[in-house]
Length: 346
Figure 1 (cartoon, rainbow, N blue to C red):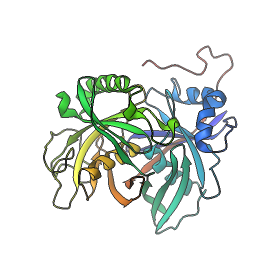
Figure 2: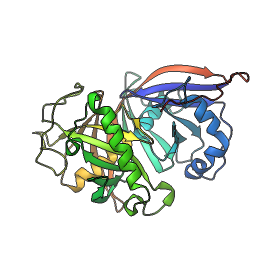
Figure 3: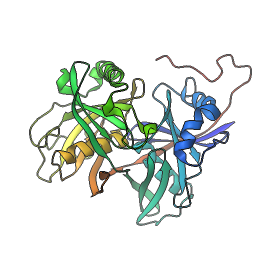
Figure 4: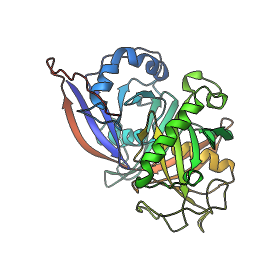
């Protein structure tokens, strides 16, 4: 029996596995990620594949942190394997740790939940009001630009790191916009771009090759200053100018964009993508942005991001969102079930 507590962050699912996972060896979380396929891949498939999950499912295994300086360790997974970072998942883990009493929280203030993930140590700053979680800010690992204007698959992309490596391109460059009606075309472009970038020097992590490779492709639209004000709906066009690759800053110094991140093999992030937002902030800060990025997803949910500091490694983005618990589950695998750990149709 496998037990989980499920959340969504901005519409993107996050399944936290609380019991039933075999021990995964390793001195740290990054090493455990390397070893996870040999020890717990059957559990990932069981929870992520149909009929218990779906092709766009996401979740994590809770593992010990690297040392006593963190509260939790997390191994993130999706239908194709294990990822190095997950901002929307870190936001959900912050809410989970406080709501389940794993971390004692200030009932009317902010409490940091420290999480070790394969890309490093991150924080979920949980804001409570009246004893209830009211918001969570994901504090990313240092993020930075790797390369700009990389020619690939008949177009050009910018490549940046936010705990994982992302390629960014304006949807307008492809004659599209970030809307559900264009999603099939965007997924097709993402697969072509990612395949063409395989092994490209710009996709190598400068310090640890285990973090190398393009994880996702981010398509974005620049939005008018008043297009997103804390909810927003899917739709709308794009505007240019202002910060390079980021539209014109509004009166409050913010830039507003709508994005969709296509990660792994054609998976679509329903949220504005936490680690992808960190990678976008690296590009925008490099281009001159000093205000807030208001980042809307393809389903209309919103993250707000800013640069909290600058280090020798890169900027430190803070990304504010919220996660909501959707259920608790106890999953089983009948030994006589011919479907076994499941399947995916794409």
